[in-house]
Image 1 (cartoon, rainbow, N blue to C red):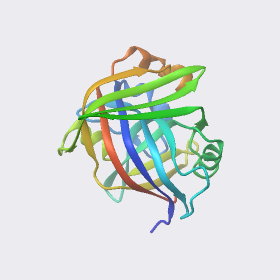
Image 2 (image 1 turned 120 degrees about the horizontal axis):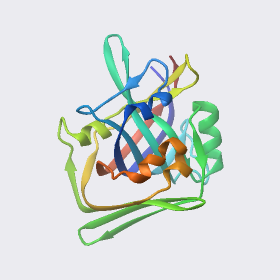
Image 3 (image 1 turned 90 degrees about the vertical axis):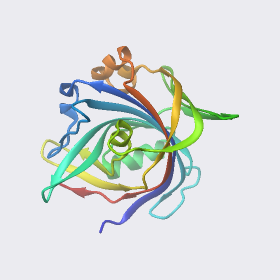
Length: 236
């Protein structure tokens, strides 16, 4: 059984989901994985959330317990012992502290980048507004307003497809991949009423993703999140 690498809470996960041609994503696939689809649709998601009470190997690192992350991710699956494991692959992960980027790049070979970041959670009466922003040349942001009532995620829905992933995969080279398990309970979600997105995708995530500037998200979800545990990686 893999040892725990990181414990934390992931809270107020704001997910902007775009339907794209799978040809855009095949270059990012780790070895031995393939793209996962929901009802024939290939998704890429822009996800912002807060890390809270973060501990590395059981230890809290001063000034690195609470911070924002915004990542662009795709959905994959990997077959082992005749069973499919559903996982995510991160195109790039943005965080506000250089030490986080250093650790993630060296240990997990993840494509982290350090940028100025901020967030805002605003609760007014029965309405919750969540925003995450980062500065790359100019300030970018994603924002959503939802009813402040949590709902269960129904089985077989798009919400379940986007949120119910428990594995991470990293492309090491053309022949090797890394795998790690992310443990968390099933999340509840808020009913999103309105959203805004102001992102230069090409500048933030690379020229291949410029096309997302022209697309409207297929869906936008706001999940409450939970405590999570990231296990040590293994090589495939």
